[in-house]
Amino acid sequence: MTLIFKNMNAFFFSIYAAVIKVFKGEELQPNELYCLNENTRWLLRTDMGFFIKEYFQNQILTKGLSIILDEIQKHEGERQLFVLAQVWDRFFTEILPTLQAILYPLQGQELTVRQMTLLGFRDMVLLKLSLGDLLCKNLSLIPASITQMLLVLQGIQESRGPSKQYCQLESLVALVVKPYLWNCRHASCTEQSATRAQVSHPEIRITHHISEGSLLSPVVEQEGEMYFEQVGNLRRHSVTNAHSDIKLLPNYGSD
Image (cartoon, rainbow, N blue to C red):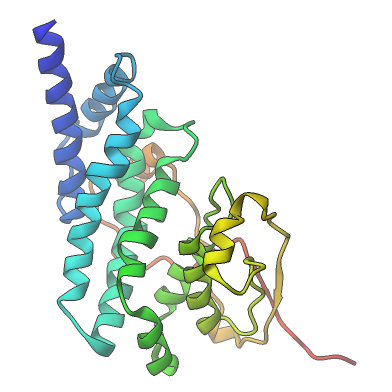
């Protein structure tokens, strides 16, 4: 029994250390991904298997995202906006697929690793910043990555309907996508949060005139293990352009 508990502690710590290392921009060692997958599978077969998701969401992810937030908050004003864009590029193209690969055995839960991680970024990074003021003051300088970030996060639906945080996010999306058709049916985020269980998700189509130069190419989603098969230990330095479940349609005006 003592050996089992020692193994549990060692396996939990190995997952924690690996995830934090990824958030710090370090690479996994050769064969480390396989070992982490096996450790996760072993833990899922124990009585503590149910705890892995909670441990990742409330402990590991919180710590990792605090590292990202601290990095962004070192800067102010326009500089903070561009640092946020750079951090998002790294988070979305490197950190997120690596976390999906590490915790691949957790797939099939109520919220996937991808959803938990993106919702965590929304709540523990994005909404901790005064992004609304930054966007209003720099509307002509908004990087494409910021638009991508907002649309990707806006596309993550919570199982119980739009939350207060989702409504706050939509207010940011409305600053960069005009006109914008809100998902939240109520003007008050507080009211929306109280009635989230009754809110449905209507299909949304947005009409907006945009130039070809501002079009955002779709992101090709990579499953965790597939990502590592394709890129191995190489870092991807190219910036992936935006993806959203919302369709942006050219508006040619009425006849």
